[in-house]
Length: 337
Image (cartoon, rainbow, N blue to C red; front, top):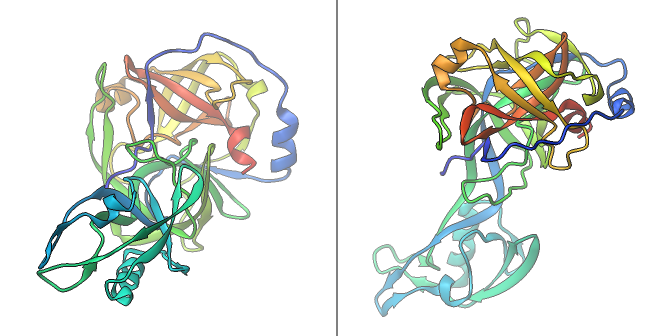
C-alpha cells in the first residue's frame, strides 16, 4: 500500500488579507458544544471503495503473454466497483468474480474522474497458478499518518487533516467505515528548502481508536470509540476566523511518541474569504519544533491552531521554499461537516 500524502506542499504565499464576519456559521454548528483540542497522530487505514488500479502488467498464460486490462482500456487510477453487476469492495471480490468468469468476458463498472464507465475485459489464465487474471496491480485500502484536529466532547465526533484525502498522484478518495489507529511517531524526515519532510510512525498494537466515515475538501471525519482516554487533552471553545488576529498563536502536534505538545507559531496573514481553505498563513517560531522537524512536515496536517485560548483552525500546507511557513484552514470550515 502506498502512503497517503496528508499534507500538501505549496510554493507561493498568498498576499491578500481580509477578515469578515463568519461567526454565525460557527455559532449555529457548535452551540453549547465543547471540544477536545487534538494534536494526536493517527494512522488512517481507509477503504478505497472498491479495487483501485495502481498499475497494469502482463498475464503469462500457456497461450502467450496478454494484457487484458490494457486492451480493454482500463487505466491506472480506475476504481473497479462492480463486475457483471456484482459489487466489488475488495481485492478478494474481484478475484472471485474473475474465477467465476471461467475465462469469459467480464463487464466491469469503473469509477473514473467522478464518472462511471464500463469496460468488457477477457481474463487470461495464469500459467503458474491457473487463476484468471486481467493484468492489474490493485489495492483496496490506503494508509497514512495525519493529525486529529478536534473531538466533540459530547458526541465524540472528530475532524482531522483539514483537506481532502489524496494519494501521491493527487487522486481523491471516498471513504466509508474505515479505521483509525493510535499512531506512535518514531522518527522525522526533516523538511528543508525545496523538499517537504514527513513524520514516520507505526500503528500501536493494531489498536483502533476511531472509525472514519466521511472525507471532503475540508478534512476527514468520524467517531472515536468509547474506550479512548481524553483525560490528557485540553478543551477549548471554537472561534471563527473573524476573531483571529495577526500575531502569536500555538499549534498542537505529535513529533515523537503518542503525546501531543504545544508549539509556538505566529499568524502572519488572515484571509477569511479564501475559497481554497487557505485562511491563515502561519510561521513556526518555536525553536524546539524547528530543531526537531525543520518546520511543518507531512503528517502534521490537521494540527490544531489555538489563539487566545480558542481553537481557530488547523495546519494544512507547507511552503516548499520555506518549511517554517504554511497555510491553515479556519475551524468554521471544518466544524460544519
